[in-house]
Length: 358
Image (tube, rainbow, N blue to C red; front, top):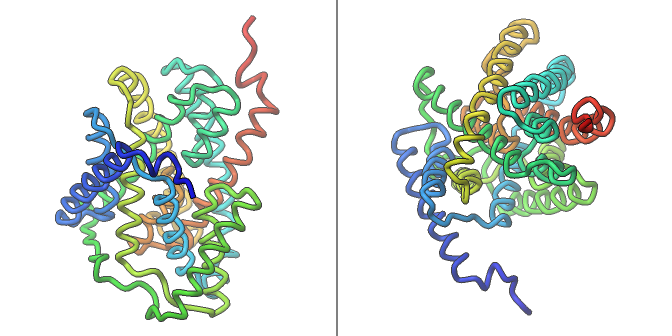
């Protein structure tokens, strides 16, 4: 059997190994500093620095996807029958996510067009707070400036993933558990391993079959919810696998800056920082407005609205032990809404979003 070209490329293997070693160094340093999500934030920062210095960094997408499946299984394990009973009370905040995502898109698009001088089409797909991969694919299919779209979304995820754990460490005094020795959920027996393995495989391929966005995460999470709510298992993947998932996600985000020139960084990343700041301010305002009215504290509401990646935000809430089921459900709702609505809105309102040149 012939191996794929990527597996026969010695230079690619060296880049993968180098990236993992850089990520391990960063994750180790940040973990020693007792930073929340140390393995993810540390590997992300160190890998990003290496990429911007011109070092060849790369991370295999198959390994990243495998780690995300494990994360999906972990998130699903936080759902219980009692959680689903409370889920009926989430309708107002889920509606708020839809309104928030729409307003954020309009506000950021206006900024990128007026100040950043982005083409209208590129501004639109850069501003919609969906998943990185999905938004890049959609933007490419419509002919937008893909590097700019990718860099704006990468910057958004980078800032949110870096700042939120740092905030909780510095201002909230949060000290994360040692994932290498922490057990989450019930005892993991051989039968539980089989159930979780089956849930991950069936969930991933089922979600991909029906074209769900981020199938490795959404499919595994939904399948894990089913087996946990129905009582087939109460176990979750061990903490060391969550640390490895953090490492994979951090390295993966950092490699997105590979090949980015200083000129591109100067022109685009600054606008990514400002646009992310605008969305974060909107998230804070909305969380403050709903605080005490919905029944969830402001911190949970803010984490539910903060515009990070679905996997990354779910991992943040899991690591902080803050309403993981509530927060991950809202980020899934945002992802589904944006991925479905963005192309539809663009088709319906293209004459307004990107009017033809006169």
